[in-house]
Each structure stands twice: as C-alpha cells, then as structure tokens.
Length: 222
Image 1 (cartoon, one colour):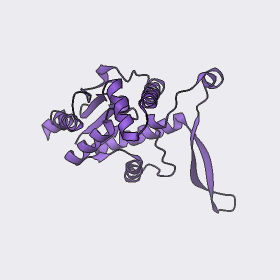
Image 2: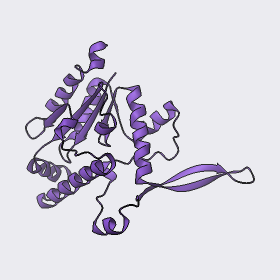
Image 3: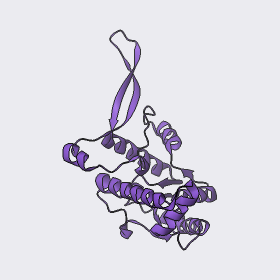
Image 4: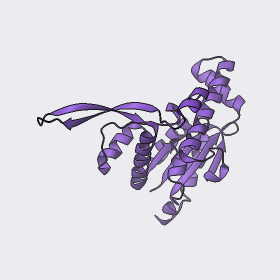
C-alpha cells in the first residue's frame, strides 16, 4: 500500500492527473466524501466534518493583518448534539476556526495514510506525511502563461482575468502552507517528483506518477 500527495499550481492540471492516477491504480481520491468515510471507519467523529483546503483559503488583507493577525478566522459552523438538563438531545452549533479545521484535516490525512492506497491533493499532505517512506510526494506545475490559457479555455473567462485568478490562487496556496505548516510550497526538496505540464501532457504526467509508485519501499517489498 502507498499514498500519493499532489501539490499543484492552479491551472496546472493537478486535479485531472490525480483522477487519472486513481483510476489507473484503483486508489481512492481524498475529498470530503472520503473524509467522512475514513472518519467512520477509524472511529473519528463524523459530525461536523469540514474540508479546509487551499481552495477554501483566502490570503489575509492588510486590515486583517493589522487588527486580527493573532485571531483565527471562523471557517464553518459545526452542528452536533448534546444532552440538556432534562436529558433530551438538542442540536448545538459551534464555530470552527482555521486552526481547528486544519487539525481535523490533518487527523483524517493521517488516518487515510494508515489505510493506504489514496491520492491526497493539496491540504498540506506533503508536510503531514513528509517523513513517510511509502508516501510519494508530487509537485505539478507549469508556466503562468500555460496556466492562464488553460483557465481561459476551461472557464470561458478572458485572459487578463484568468491571469489574475491564477495569481490569486497561487498566493493563497503559498500562504496557506506557509502559515499552517511553515513551508515554502515551491521548495523542490519537499517533493520526490516535480512535473511540468507545460511540456508533458496530463496523460504522460499521470503515467510517470503511476510508474514512480512502483519504486517506493512499500511497493518493492510487497
């Protein structure tokens, strides 16, 4: 069994590559549905499962940094049940802040790793599982020009707006990993395989990932 983590620049095709890898290897794709399933299978609480990834994260603006740098932002409202003074179960809604959400995601990533055969896109997987010999850490990237053109075609937006969207999402992903994990997401030493989809097709990139898994210690010993 093995685990693959994929760090992707926005518009690099990382999600599509992950889906192809899952299809080829029969691996599970880490998403909110799988998070709930893993929580149930491993005895973690399914109530209030919140998926807090780079895609949900927004870079703090100047006023946030000036007035609320030490205050985690609320990212969700979590519903649970508690017993009141009369013994009746009543619903309770609590706010879930960024740090709590990150902790929850980390717990599910670790539980998914123990089960194996899963592809984790983003969410700091390369940091959470950095010392695991049977985890393949992959970086998917491409030039800004390539990525803005892809977003322009995929989402039907003009090139200038696509350029801004790519820059904004890249900044959010970089800030997310720096803030919660203290890493530079572009640091090549974090990854075992770095692929440029400006040169490689998504199919070719997925093929390279699938082949690389065969050389992990767990695969060699099985």
